[in-house]
Image (cartoon, rainbow, N blue to C red; front, side, top):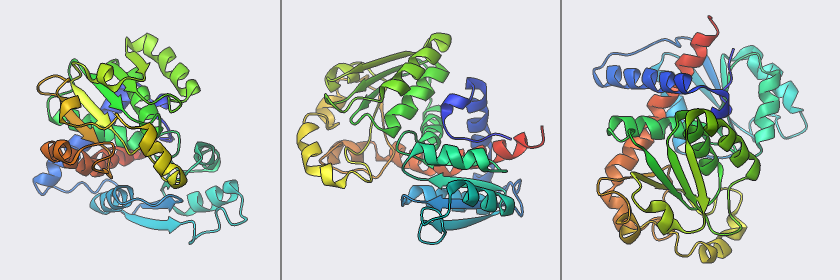
Length: 308
């Protein structure tokens, strides 16, 4: 049995296999061929952080695979209201076939997984957002943009940045991360990524100048400057992140055919301009849709591991 908590735990071949399963399922769905590989199985979805894309994609995906999804907020269950995480994990994993958790502390999902009898999927923590990176890379493959990849990440050193670092380290491309001073990536995650990168030949660079990061990049990506739980920092962050908005001027520094990605929600006029976002909206919303297909590939892959 395998859990999906961070891309660090997966090989390049496994990551690409998961995405390939998702692409096959997506192609079949478009042709009205339905894969019922998870028929009669139940996915428990635990949400301590709310989300549009995570809930809709996992719930719809499980339905399309022939299974059922349960939405469980922290108001619906005893988790966080007196019951130890390990007890909740034992109970839910004795009744359900798979668990997806979207929460704050990464240690919470690690503890839950250590007591779970079934696969646990990280739907987002403050440290990592690996399911989003499956969708992002699937999108680049579909747009023939995965070769000779040079990715520029502009913005906060957050869970998306950490997940890009892990994907880069595993797959072996170049990643340039530009953050304001004081908002850099986690040093431990950076050290782990750089160590893994020695094996794949990946290049990971961190800096504070977004223009240097974007120069001749083939992909430019960003994320909100203020993540959930940081609302009281919003006004301060807007001032500090001045100059980090991806707009036409910044995008013009990248390769002519460079792609723009955003995990959404997008705050126009902050991390991305309205004009730039709308120019690249087709690929961004394809990226959003691919959360559905990449996660179906992941759930099918995890289910198959139980039979090995």
